[in-house]
Image (cartoon, rainbow, N blue to C red; front, side, top):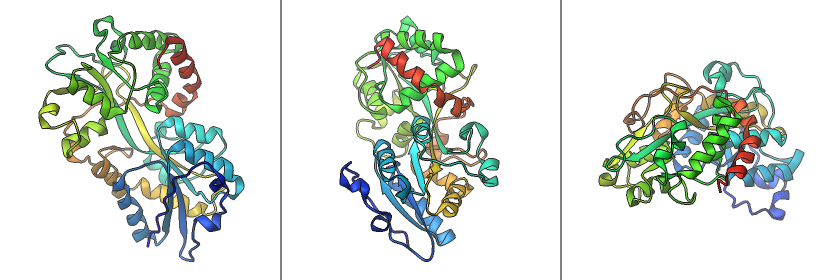
Length: 344
């Protein structure tokens, strides 16, 4: 039976708790997850893995910054086997901090596309979200068709986006740098800031709500926030509101739509390394990949896995296949550009 462990992870003396006091030992085998994924639907992933393997899944959940700080504080005594988090920037930060290790797995190499893997096999992407353009169909006759056009003066005062401190913003700009060069990315970011309808604020759902309220005419959001509203009730995004929102998968004649990923890597001091690799291989199975789509409206990382109806309803598109390891290397340059153009 899975024994979930949840912890608020206040960065106090709790960071020095020993492995044995945090995770119960089990002769049947276990794997210890530090996860920043906060979706109740992931419960199916954990229970299914245990049913298939007999391996107990223990987990601590918190935001990525807290988990990374905890692993650093615990050092060689950390009980963490796997770090699960969202976005390339956080996975890259964990790698740079020396918290992950390289692994060899024929299963992962075969099933996960190369551009969704770390160059040193320290992390792998297991689900994706497209970061696309949404617009009010009643107020925008000619929505931008690519990311570059979001900086066009024709859209001045119309665009809503999250702050520069958000990882989605950071990774998007890092991808623009990779695809178009640093100079062009700086010009783009400045034009984008000039087109803001309001100061950056809130999460992705708040950008969509901004369309409904009329604060914005154009907004950028990850697809799974909107697909969720197609499938179930989301506050401020009822059926009438959704009917007035159109969307564009950007850059279909260029690099393709920018993708955010959810991924995981084996902790550098993993006490259950073999079980950790088994869990990552399970996440790459068709069964688990379908859970990601059906449970959280995400796109599978493994090609050919079917989409849930809410995700499929958004249509087919070409994703950007830029190497995410290369994108991660651009994060420091992206931060400099944010500072330069005044993207708060």
